[in-house]
Image (cartoon, rainbow, N blue to C red; front, side, top):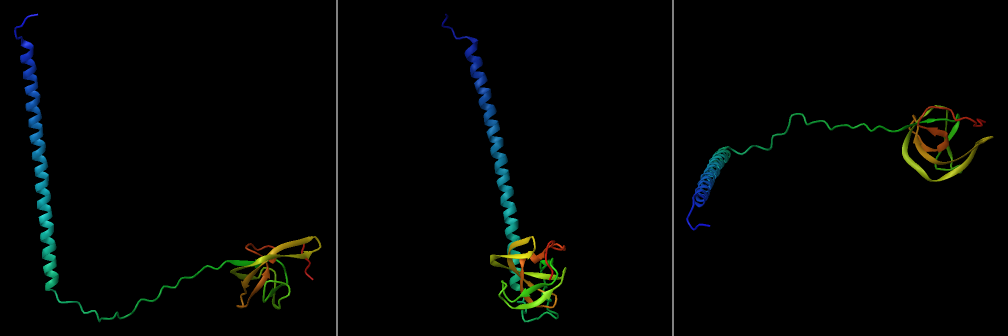
Length: 172
């Protein structure tokens, strides 16, 4: 090995110097572009503030609005029609009663396929009733309203959402 300085250390220093100068140029350009963005944002904010100040001064110069003016025709209230579930009587001559059970007074006799409005009330318990020779049902009572406007209770097996006749029922 010789102790003479060779070409390799000089090349290394030259390469490191070039990288350092390149990094400085990149850093300065990045700082300049960031500074430019900050200046643009400041100019935009100043313009927005000037608009807000001019609008505020314009509003303060205007006379206050007279709030005692009433509309000529007030808007009509919106009427919403609720769709009420319709049930159909499935047993001819079924009794509508004042309460949910056979011991309550009969209000009206309904015919097969009569439409009644379901009022959303169902009895808490069910009742077992023999409707025909081979037809034993265990249903709750439902509260309904007839086309005439009468409200009462009908045995649940005697009404349905679909129009059909309950088979096996004694119609006496």
